Image 1 (spheres, rainbow, N blue to C red):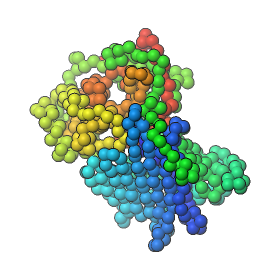
Image 2 (cartoon, rainbow, N blue to C red):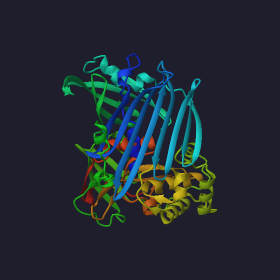
Image 3 (cartoon, rainbow, N blue to C red):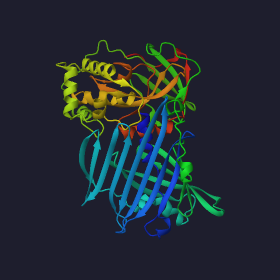
Image 4 (tube, one colour):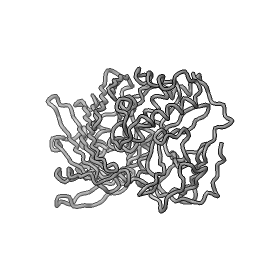
Length: 483
């Protein structure tokens, strides 16, 4: 889940280069930026504006992350190129994510009144025809065009951007919140402070843009910063940022028998919003002044008649359908799921078999890659993200509705605390949570669920990363009753 957030982040950087109705010649070229996670440098990015021989405008973003995951060095390369016609219409988008396990590609091009999107993930290529996006060059260069028009504090600007990884167009709104006076390269200049909100993914960013349209800095969700730097300084990265430890919520003393507890009571301090407050049979989260009370109770399945396969409910069957990252219709996943499950039709028994098989056969290792079920089945290695995505792929392949869950889990050891984690939920007559990383057919009470669903839904965790503090409270106030 951690590397998913890392990759989601880059697609949120506002594109702030040049406007259609301006002379772009002086602005052609490259800008370099250092990328920081919670104040620690984690990578660098280059943004380039080019004009080809036909007059088309090319906007290129090229970013590299170098992070440490509990001693394991990880490299991620993210590249995108957007091409706009001379009159400003979107022509095509090329996007690539490269890491040690391989490369994922998302290529889109406008064709008539539609957009053809070709996604290649885990060696599996899918083609979709989608509505033509509204995005144009004016959206891509919104802030540079805006500040050159000398806006005032309080002015507002709407925009859209198509993100191939999400297979959809996302809208947002920007506001001028302040105008500052700075000296840039020895010249007094105005700098516009712009707040941008993208409601679909619940993320706000603050950008500082000079009056000539140059982006000086972006701060995304309060914990990710992209700052303009000379090329040599931008590239000065040395794997010091341990994203696992720096993003965790540490506690003062260990929790006794965390996997066996019947209940737990915590107080969460941080930027939680309505999208993070999940309440179900296992957990409840409620506002408590300027904090949030979290209660969890171990689920009991005795006396409950689990569902039998095949599932008939169309609303549930949507969670068996294939996606770009969960290729549940692939023959390899289907064959492996049948091999594991055999003739079993009891949904709970199937879930237990799949959970145990993934746990027993996966080699646990930290990895920073754009995970997908088919690729994990081939490599059979990874951390919580790989364990959960393979479990979900196998479950869907056999007809068991399943989806992704993300949040935090308590981990003991030298630095006890709550670490960001990913697990799964399946339908067995009701939704239950399963953690194949720890071979838990029923997730224990130290799992704090803060997101459900695909990559887009998990992006809502970005404002929380590294910004949560947790207190362990006495259990006597635990609220939910075990089901």
